[in-house]
Length: 460
Ligand SMILES: Cc1cc2nc3c(=O)[nH]c(=O)nc-3n(C[C@H](O)[C@H](O)[C@H](O)COP(=O)(O)OP(=O)(O)OC[C@H]3O[C@@H](n4cnc5c(N)ncnc54)[C@H](O)[C@@H]3O)c2cc1C
Image (cartoon, rainbow, N blue to C red; front, side, top):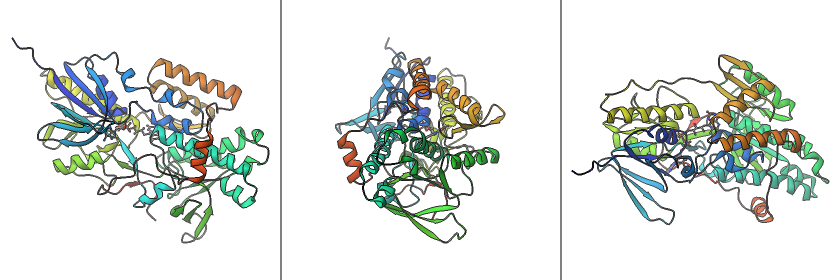
């Protein structure tokens, strides 16, 4: 008698959604292939700590192979998915040397995440890099540290001021967490280390199109965050839009008494934390299935995360729109686990489980290294208590005990000895490329033809 071929599941993306779908298929009689264009599972919520020199990248980005090594029915492939043939049920990808890969599937899970959106100004990606990948975070770290090194070398006060001016665009959680770190570097970590320059003279701006920082949070937490950032020396411009930028400046509109007034600020560092757009895979799936996309290019899925007319294709996480859920980690994690259960029960002949239901676990953000705001477990807390809650939750969700213990150790060491910044290596070559080259994007800008982005600040 011929042995029955196991059911083939291809998972595109080894992020929060894809990895949780893969892991929840561990007990099932399936062959799972996870395809990702990186070889690691990235814990994006702690990326800013890599950019700030607090954590080394390895602690928040374990290799996918190591994460699934004990799951005998799963394998990982490093490849870039270029096309999905829904009729032939095949995923087309290319390997690192451009070799074509053809991956047949019985069930497909697409979890390609999201990328930056520049409100129709893709050219800004060159001047204001964002942070989505490990490369992005390492690049930002090099750029920020190079700016301080250049300020130390500069003899012209105007040039020095430009190197010491940092503008972060977007005051959502990522912008707030990043700006807090830049302020701590300038005011707490670096002052005693520099001889010619007073790093506390740094001008650090947070530009936000809406009327408050941390848009989705409770007003009490927003007020706390604004007050705390201002105390740390951050200049906050609310109701202000980026309307232009180049290598040495940014122009913003509004943010003062006259909403139509524009101001050009000389700066060598602009960081983009303002807009998000779904992976181009969402637009591809929408075009091929007739599904709709929303303003952020996210594909609208059925209540069980499948695509219209294709019960064998699931899409989850940041690239989908379902029940108006935000593009954060918990929906992706929970959808991934749910999809694993649906596939398992279908194969067991148990019928279709109930539609996906989301359990809201709250939201949190740090404001500098020892303060945070948290709206979770029915409480709204701030300060050190918020920070402890934030730390516990983030450590819990990291993958692997080694990484959890390593992170706790690194934080404890930083809090005790090195003011939180043990990972500040740059070389002459890196600094040279930051100081003289364009501020090139490290993540791909949105693909042409994809729907316009969700805007955390309104368009200019
Ligand atoms: C800087 C930052 C901070 C954040 N902070 C928080 C936070 O504090 N709390 C929170 O809840 N959420 C936070 N988020 C959001 C959260 O990380 C995302 O919502 C979550 O990662 C979404 O999971 P996902 O599986 O949909 O996508 P991702 O985790 O982004 O995974 C997508 C994967 O798909 C792969 N991929 C994409 N296209 C292809 C392709 N063509 N071929 C092969 N592989 C591909 C990518 O390499 C990636 O590994 C943050 C995000 C960022 C960027």
